[in-house]
Amino acid sequence: MLVLLLLPSGSTATAVEYCNKGRDYPVKVSGVEIVPDPIVRGEPATFKISASTDKNIATGKLVIDVAYFFFHVHQETHNLCDETSCPVSGEFVLTSKQTLPSYTPPGSYTLTMKLLGDRNKELTCISFGFSIGFATTNAII
Image (tube, rainbow, N blue to C red; front, side):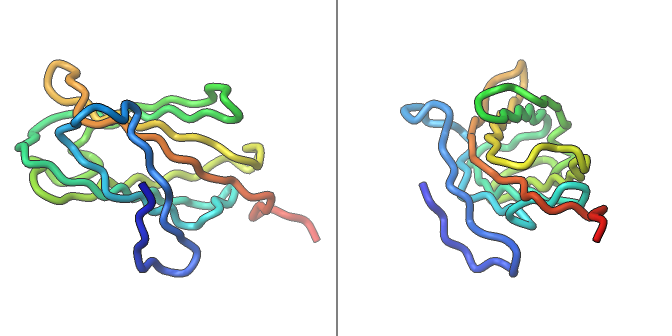
């Protein structure tokens, strides 16, 4: 699914795929925005995931896995209520800000995000690609 949005300069709509295309997840993801795109090593990057649900979700966690050319390179877990206002219902946005180290290799990455609810029930699972550029903020001229 490709979502076209009017976004600020330095960002683009990102193609999102569900982990299990045949599954009817309780949380539907409508889009992902990455600013800047491509991500610049050593500078903050913001991931905004737009989603909706007809459930009332009071607690949960986000499990994020990152792969670089199919090699698992990073995993982190966040409390859902640290990433958005709880309880979650209707339309909502998950926002995560990261600063990647300046030694992060440039190239194409894949991020897989699972939203887990009570008793680790999978509420959604998506994956999308992102790029890390060659530029760094500590370049010597």
